[in-house]
Amino acid sequence: MGLGWLAAGGVAGALAGVSLILRCRALQGARKARAVPVPVHAPLALGTPTDFAQPRPRWRHGRTDKLPEWAVEFFVAHYRRHTNGYRKTAAQFCQLHGHEGWTACASTVAKYIRKAEAREEAARTRCRHRIPEPQPANTEWCLDMTGKVDVQGRLHTVLGVMDRGTRACLYLKRMIGQDTAAVLAVIRQLIGQHGTPERIRTDNASVFTSARFTRAMKALGIRHVRNRLASPWQNRIERMFGTLKSRLQWIRLRDGRHLDELLKTWVTWYNHARPHQHLHGWTPAQAWQGVNPFTTRPTRVTPFHPQVWRGLLTGYLIERERC
Image (cartoon, rainbow, N blue to C red; front, side, top):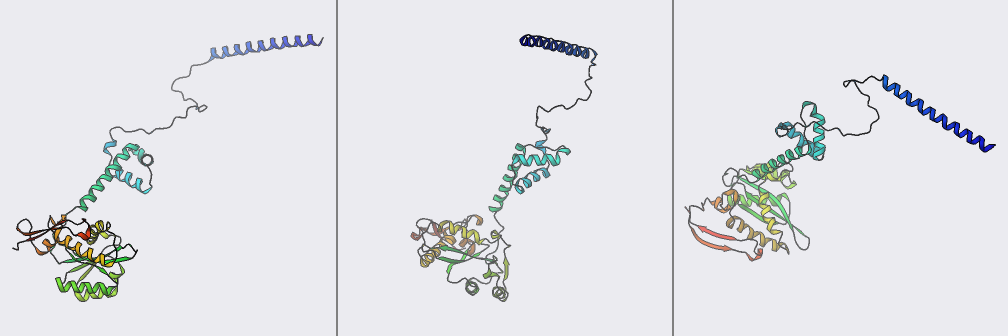
């Protein structure tokens, strides 16, 4: 009884499902018959997003090589100020100037930034190797201090005085004290030997900015010129110190007396045996004395190889005829 009723119910359910499917297909066919074709220009609904296509800018081919100068300045300034990469710099440029028709990609930004950096480096090289205008001897002196540490860890202060026009090293010795009185004593000594210069250039160290130093310069009738802050390149004695330190760094300094011997020998080499590039191949001593090495005949040539410098200083001491 129970099994028969279950079988009869299953057959009835299956027939009902088949009839429902047939009715749905009939309705779909009727709707397709009554459907009106949609025109192509009609707006379509967005629907469910399936493809996440990334928006890409519309690159203007042929115009990236003709970007104006303000665009290059934007690339360099934004790249350096915000420390961003080429891609982010290009994206920011397109955001700001894309509506004006100016766009750029990362490779374009990289190209212009590299060109700008190359121009800046070339300008620095020209400025660094630029030969200055000739200046009379004993017109301006350059003063500064440097130091050297010995093997025992003691710092020895060195005072240097250089003539700006001829690059002649007038004084280079170790100082016991770093006070204004010691510096003024050296200046008065050099004035007694070479005369009074018109100007003295120093940095902004406390030794050179003290009231005592200022009063002494006015009393001597010398104009005191100081560098701008954080501008050591304005004092040309820094270049002489660079030449000194490039060789002094290879020497193990024993004590102060060892440094005195090294400095004395180095001054001789620098003034008499080393041709200077900015002096067109003249030595500082020849420029100071006014002896043209290309028109005067040598009378004595002595090789200069001081043992105390262990082969770091080489050259010739040449004596020439005086005109």
